[in-house]
Image 1 (cartoon, rainbow, N blue to C red):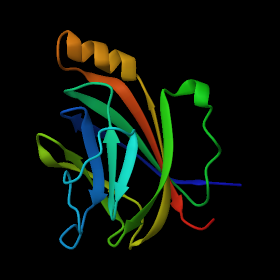
Image 2: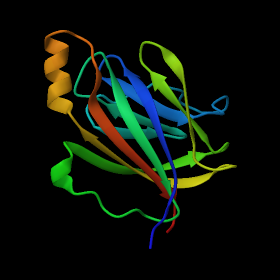
Image 3: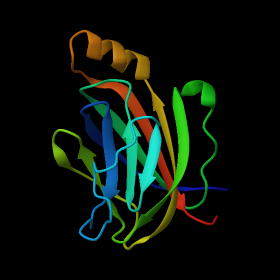
Length: 155
């Protein structure tokens, strides 16, 4: 049975409907954030990078990041507006949160003590509320919520 190894809560500063998660040791990444960002999909990837589109233009989304020892139990799709899975490579075992307008933020996510190959599932709720907020007041905190679950690839 899958066991939760670690859980962290971080903020993602969304700008231009987007934010990213990128390998912390990013000096050798071929496509650094936000180059070649694909706004047409919820979750897209580049080596060492996860690009996530938001329902709102400018706000602070909350992320619950979980690291599991094997694939976590499936999330009920009815609880989420969007869900997607992808592969992710980390050379350092740490992931930085990136914003379109603020660049790299202080939020670091620890996956492991060293690098490795991961599978990740990203789930999001509150997209319509974030979109409505963008059309009204313009900013907010925690309206859009994400659950980002990592587990070792190949399991």
